[in-house]
Image (cartoon, rainbow, N blue to C red):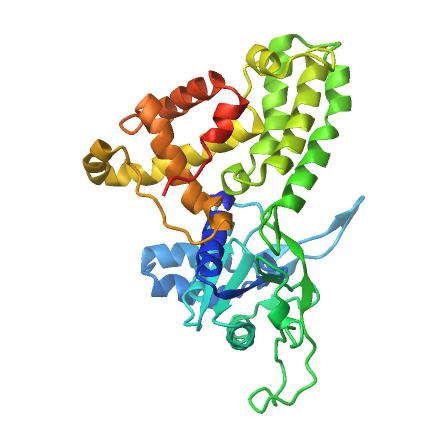
Length: 406
């Protein structure tokens, strides 16, 4: 599982709730020095509870206990000090052991709340029929999470824990009510009379490298990506004087396309106007590294560079993610092939939801499969055939693929 899977799970849940007219809060927790504050005795107990016993548990006990550390500054070395907390940093086992340690947090029974974790990055998605109900569920969930963290000796950083209130419109019905989320640390929580402060509320948040804004329009994410791509122009202006075209192309794939493609399957269905701005930044880099004039034809530029446009790259990633999810259910996919729908469509109420990955990827997969018959291929073969097809069509045909079919 990757960070893209984690962001995708969060956004799919968010889209589903909002499309069903529910109100949603996203709460993004910040754990202070999470890997360094893991309690070794508690960790060993958790390992035993999941079936690590006997010699296996003895090995972990030997690995985690009786550890020491020293500090060296110049030629001065401190005395050894015992390390009673934390998993070894930089080790292969460190992240896995932390996942074991925090696993029970994901299994808490929270009303109208889902927990999403990726290492120590934890997010809560709370929903309700109205803002008042959603706020109540959010505060109850936070209270239970705080108790679990305290019991497991993990510290929640209240200054960096933030809240995003997701909505499609300006939510006029909530303007006259208090929508601040408070994490209660006092004894008067049940009575509702306390002086606990509300968490910081923001319009957008960076979660696992992706900027989520309150309307999930991806404007902040795309604008940030544009800025990062344009900063590469200076690098390629210097590289083209000292490297051959093949080397420059390899560097482009490693520097530029890696920035553009990060989680693009999730935000690649954004508004055409926003995507055009990013494609202009991409073309600026391509023209600089290939010494083309600013007026050089766009179609010819992509053809010569053998590079997908931003939108085509998004379509490729969506199709491949959907292809991977279908491979375990190949028999049912073959049965649906006769109807031209290898991948079942997701019904959505709003046009906004139809542009999300959960709905758009199924539409794209069926359209691409109709042209290339990729459903029976391996992921590598499907990728090559999809890229070949997309390189053969123009801008208008690419945008036509994004039209949702009921």
